[in-house]
Length: 367
Ligand code: AMP
Image (tube, rainbow, N blue to C red):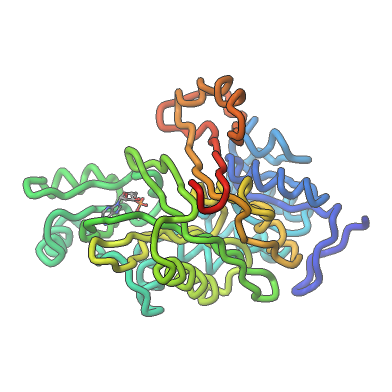
């Protein structure tokens, strides 16, 4: 099929090239889904031999600030998407002048900063964890007075898998907590007495159509996602509320692509948004094996202007991350009937590093 140029509405024909910023496993699995639909992928990432480049037609190894490399990349692709959200504004602007960038800067801008993100969500009338900004240790003292202890101090930018987070307990020293956070600005959140952690992934197409996966239940260990169980064991009403929250945020962001929304369920049954990500998400990996159209294919469909696929699961699923040495069990997992094994091709195993995942399926309603 012939190449065409992505326009505001026309679908991008198979054979075209999707540019992906970021070289990790999310980019790898996006590239594999793109290949299934006949697209090529070109990865832009700072690391050589990254998981995404291993399975893609082309790769540019350069810093996210390298303007010459970005310009050449933009000229070589038909649309650009992201596998992580912390790309500098100037780079996104440069790319946008040459090629459609989906999602666009607005979605990235909001999700790059926890404070901006929380203000945006609260501005939609959606409940978040109670929070306040702290730009100095003095301000931290004030907001700890207001929000109380225990509370969690989080860096506003570049925090993931619990990095840049400090629990403020009854005896915590605030000077030490500020140093430990290692960032110029933070937000303090009230510590939520959690019943469960949920997430919902919604895709939004170029035409504004929505496709929403069921709410799932996430268990974290050491701040890193350990398991995702789909569907979440919650009432239909709460599941529908969680899906509705994700849809409202995606619409308000005018997003083309995927949005993952992580939420807490409090002991008294309230839903609070914790954080969002405008990209594929670890808690959506189960969809690859349990739905006709998984999250990565859904992202490809959205950014290429294709109709979105079905989000209805054919099976229930439990996804378990393989973190660090967990991956050494690969041979046993490969021998396990019914286990869907995914390995990310990372040469070096490190503690806390996501090396792969395994999804176990059961017939719907029988798990
Ligand atoms: P985050 O990086 O914000 O997703 O936080 C990582 C994990 O830390 C969450 O999934 C929760 O398990 C826990 N956590 C974060 N913020 C809070 C909070 N305000 N109250 C209770 N637990 C939290």
